[in-house]
Structure formats: C-alpha cells, structure tokens
Image (tube, rainbow, N blue to C red; front, side, top):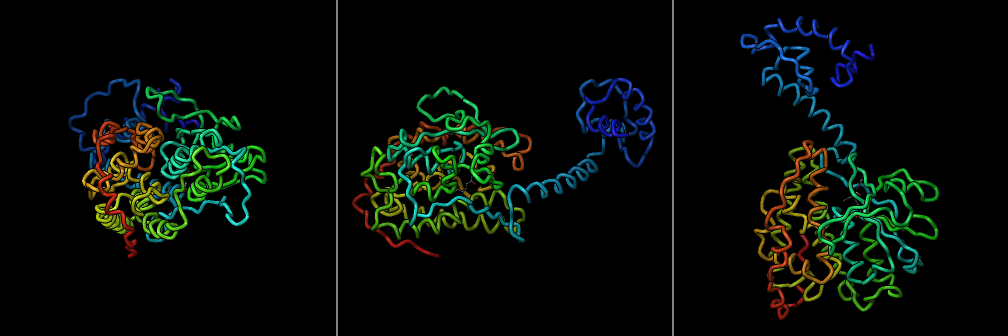
Length: 412
Ligand SMILES: N[C@@H](CCC(=O)N[C@@H](CS)C(=O)NCC(=O)O)C(=O)O
C-alpha cells in the first residue's frame, strides 16, 4: 500500500512493473464525462518518459488534461492553504495578518558590557539589510582586522550555510567558509553556544572566539558597539557615527524609520492579508515621501554628518529597486523616482569602502530565492538603474552643506 502511494506521488519512484499495473486504473477514470471537457479530442496516449508530478496525477485521474477551470480551482485551494501554513511558521504575524518580527535573543547590556573588541568574529549574509549595517560600520571604523568576518549564503532550504564563492569583482565581499568555527551552517554555530540555543539562526551574529559564545545577534547593538565600544582596536577611532549631541535625533529617526521603512518593506512583503498589506504600504510610502522632503535641504538625516541613522536607512534603500519594489510589492513608486532619496543613497554608496559591502548580485540572488514569495525561483535581471555605474554617478549633495542646520525630526 505504502509503495503505491509513493509511486503515485512521484513517477520516478515507480518500478516498470508498477507502471504496467497502474495503466488500467487510468482507463477506468478516462470515461468520466464530468471530469474531462477534452474527452472528444483525446488522442491515444503517447509514452512520456519524463512526466511531471502534476501531469502524472491528472493523467491517472482524468486522462490527458484537466479542464483549466478545475485545474486552477484545485491548485489555488491547495496552494493557498499550504502558503498560509508556511507563512505562519516562517513569517509570524498578528491576528490581522501583519508580519511581526521576532525579537533578537542576544542583546548587549551597554551598562555592564566589558568587551574589548578582541577575539570577536562577525557572521553576516550579504543579502541581509540588518547584517549590512554591521559591515558598513565595521568598514568605516576600520575594524576589519580586529573583527574578522565569515559570510554565509542562503541554502536551498532557506537556512544560512557556508561555502566559499569567488566572483569576478574582487573588490566586493563574497561568501566564505566559516573562518572561526569551521561549521557548515549558521545553525551549527549557534549550537556551539554554551547552554545551547533553539531560536532562529539569524545574521548578524557577533561571536566571542575565546569564550565560544554568542555575544549579540541584534544589529542595532552591534553597530553601537562597533561605533563606540572598540576604540582601542578601531583603525578609525576618531569617527563617531553617534556623537552625544545627535544621540536623541538618531533615536527619533530610528523610531520612524525602523517600523515604517526597514521593517516596513518586510511588512509589505510578508503581509498575510490585504488589510495588513495596505496598512504597511501606505506607511512605507508616506514615510519615504516625508524623508524625500527632509533630504531636499539636509545632506544626511541629522544634518551635515553621517550618523548611524543614515547607515540604517541606507541598507534598505540600496535593496529597494533591486528586490523590495517587485518581490515585496513595494510598488507605489521606485526609489529612482525619489530625487533626493536616490541622490542621498548614491552619496552614501560613494563613501570610500561602502560600495565594497554592497554585493548587488548576492542581494538579488538571495531575495529571489525566498521560496514563499517566489516559488518558481526565477531570478529577474538586475534593473539597469541599480548597477554600480548608475550608483556611482554624481549626486551633488555636497552643495547642501551650507543648509546643514538640524531640522526637527517630524514625529507623526
Ligand atoms: N533583529 C535582527 C534581525 C535579523 C534578521 O532577521 N536576519 C535575517 C536575515 S535578513 C535572518 O537571518 N533570518 C533567518 C531566519 O529567520 O531563520 C537584527 O536587526 O539583527
């Protein structure tokens, strides 16, 4: 009995003998006029050595093909239930269907932490906007030697794994093996943490090599640490991306940008109801409109100087037209249509060392591998406007310097 079920589900598992005995069953069902509108035109069946699963099932039950309406109804019902089941697990949501991001489990207690910046290792994935923040601050603070990195790639099952990849552009960060622990997957690295860990294996992850434990898996904390906690080992310790006079402003911007933009694009893409999507997409675009207005007279969010708030906004903007616009249904406008935001993004992209953290191919590749959103797995071409040549074009935002007064952060 079990063998029959398996061979029915996958033709390649059938033995020739089973295939022979299965044929008369097909004939019995072919006669049902209710089930096949194509009954009149049916041709004698040709042997098809490499039939797909669906063709085999429909062939068994109804002959050559299902009527299109029935086919769509059956598959829609099955797919919708399976999709909802999958999304519930992969993208937890509230009762309205709005994506709710699980909280990071390893946070830094800034009052008591005594990290020196030595013996640390950073794990990232190139597609991840949260991990990208840590790569940018690490680069700007010149922490590459002090905090080595391992770069994970998305595996076929959607989990982060390690494999070395070489690319044509050697100036860009590329996926690597696990250089600290020699693990095959990020889940294994989390598993080495004393006391174990059963949560999600997310990037970024800051690992203590000596103590063999997770220090932190929250990007907001890691960038704070990199900015101000490791001045003893940072090559560029004079750079402060969160000066005391701007801390409050940075916090205010993050309180707007995190829910509406950084996480907002995910709330569009992972919405599980029309209402949840409408809410997310409206908040996203009204915030982008407001940011575009603000950036018309201010070079960066807090005026003349780049801060952590800009780093956090940048990593979402650089992915916008590449992935979020299409895949996450952030379709109201392209980022390219926002003059000031686009110039601002290019301004940050052109800061020395930032472009090398932006592996556009890897971003595109990973996002379009997100099975629940792109089950066919076809990867679209990189939009011409997202290429390095366009991102490197003049932005002329230096001229805004003379206007660099700190404007109030509009809190809605
Ligand atoms: N709050 C975390 C979010 C990190 C996060 O969600 N990372 C994603 C990649 S963009 C991840 O690794 N997901 C894997 C999973 O959930 O299994 C942060 O900002 O560091």
